[in-house]
Length: 123
Image (cartoon, one colour):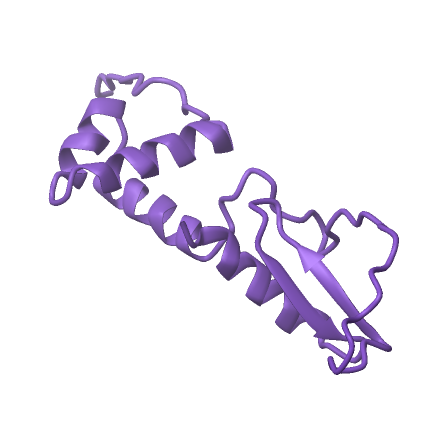
C-alpha cells in the first residue's frame, strides 16, 4: 500500500462582474502589462484574456440584458420636424451608456441586441 498526499489547492474564487470589469479596465490601462495585472489579482493570464474577450463581446457588462430583454422606458413622442422622414413604425432605443439607435418596427431582435452590445463596449 502506498501513501498518498492530498494537497489542497484552495477554494475556487468568484469575482463579481463589477470586479471583472475593473480588472479588465486596469489591464488596458497598462499596455503590454496584462500578465502583471493578472498576477496582481491572483488570476491566470488566460483568464484575464477570456474576460477581455467577453467584455469586447458585451457579455461581461454589468447592465447586460437578461434573457434577451432590455428595460424599456416610454416617453411622450416628439413631433417630427417639417421635411423629415416619416417616423411611423420606428422606435428609438437608448442604451445604458446613453447611445441611441433608431430602428424600424421590422428590425430583427437578435441584430438589434448585437448592435446594442457593441455600442455598450464603445467608450
